[in-house]
Length: 462
Ligand SMILES: O=c1ccn([C@@H]2O[C@H](COP(=O)(O)OP(=O)(O)O[C@H]3O[C@H](CO)[C@@H](O)[C@H](O)[C@H]3O)[C@@H](O)[C@H]2O)c(=O)[nH]1
Image (tube, rainbow, N blue to C red):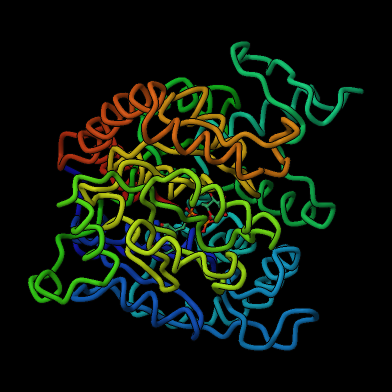
């Protein structure tokens, strides 16, 4: 067991985006179980979500204001899922630098000294504060080892800087069995300042806390830790979604949400349900939404679709025509609860890393439809490396191409009813078992890695 003297104090500073905050909140449960004191720093609008996710714990949640009067960003927008357009993401993340004086005042006034901090890679400037106050900073980027290795290798080798087309497959040096295209990488000119700042600060930090487990991607964990000599180490402590404490009794006997009742009905009818959700920030064009509705409708498969879009965006009469077979939810759901429901047999996902890990943990195969950020790499990992999913095919063959309903219908059937679907289902069940083993108290690889990390970092003189 780690040295868990009660005075050890961890500062957690998640980025203001659900996909980045949720895993850090799960991490806080693991730290609290080891008797460490935990302080989470956030902004006023994000505080209720965090407080709700950490009920009945001793974690302190402290707030500092989010910068106001930012160009292009509506006042009161403190989370990336509320941004009017994802093109404002770099601006939003860069503006967090303005929080530094308030952050440092907060650190000045903490009742207990900080032993170490875990802060998001997009809060690059928090390293400067950590150095000033003399505590180590660990980075949380939310990405898997595979994606980090691909970014590093492709950047260092310049392999995608040639004359090839955006969709030409190029062999990745060091990993000759992997082929990627330029379209597997996001290209936003405005991103570069943020990316450079984040990477530079990450490389100068104590280490990386990675939401993954060794047995899922051993080659890439080893590569992460060996390729850059003396670079900060990757500590795999996940899947963090399995760190959630047991549901309190009062909540367990709560009225089930309508979509869980519907899934119960499907279970009784022995219908396998496709869960459809694209995370907290992906935006799907109006034209593409219509093809999704049509593809789902024609596939004849039962589906549960979580979306923010109005009925008119999905196609008039869509919900009425599919009543009984399909269910559309427009609220925040407990995605883990859905994925773990016995009637769910597949997940049409944008491959945000949390969604991938949640699906792996629940043993649900994935129909991969990446949309932005590092999701194209995650999709390649899911389909080509882990073989736990099938890829949605676009009409022009490009990984960023438009998907027509005919292709989607075919892929949905392939996953839910086809031979390939059976194969990937067996494989994901294997990884699900390994994921649970990795998180086993005192014995699992991720559990022991976190113990080692705490022991190492808390015994160091800074
Ligand atoms: O109604 C909802 C909607 C979402 N979630 C949860 O929200 C998280 C969403 O995370 P993810 O699946 O990773 O998607 P994004 O929100 O899109 O995540 C961003 O952050 C990830 C982690 O860095 C990246 O992998 C993605 O590319 C990036 O878009 C997951 O834990 C979901 O379970 C819910 O619980 N209920």
